[in-house]
Length: 277
Image (cartoon, rainbow, N blue to C red; front, side):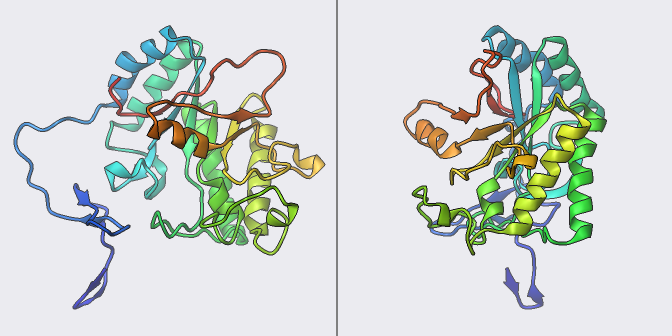
């Protein structure tokens, strides 16, 4: 935001409350002095004890958890990341996060992390990674490996892949299936190469890991192996369909490129860690 002393971040890292003014896209941080009794945010321990058993009883075999990377604004679903190597302190300590992952594995559930490596999106007020920089590639690749190695996540859902793969970030664009829409001047080649690199690295180091890409464009070769010219995601999540379901009170996900062995049944349950079911 513009101030008499210059441009400043409208949402400082220390801010505890933010609001979106009517008719505006960005959120503004404000001082908040709440009453003594205020709804609490659930913790990693609450999720372990209260939510995971219910997920198991309902017959799911995997859970995707959101808002793990440290973020300043709670209601952003974790998409304004302030520290890529720190689990969110909103819900507990790093060891507290390891506890529900261990419990999920005891219950036979895969525990997937919603990871934010996406680029610029003017509607979301998010910044752009320079995917053509060696330093950025090392940072992001090490970040993906670190979460799998340190916390024993079983894989990722990469958020906002459409925003990464195109210079127009998928905004105000209608994808019709014409190949020129996917393999042309609007394609961010550096970003696509990064996705190929990270998926190939994860599959090489952790063959059992599950990698889901959230893309609304229908990019061809999205789930083909890198050696065949693909991006090498295991599953393609078309979240726009799920979004329509949310508006009508129904939840739906579309996972394509499913295995033929009958191994996955209604596999994806999207939860923000603090959600109280």
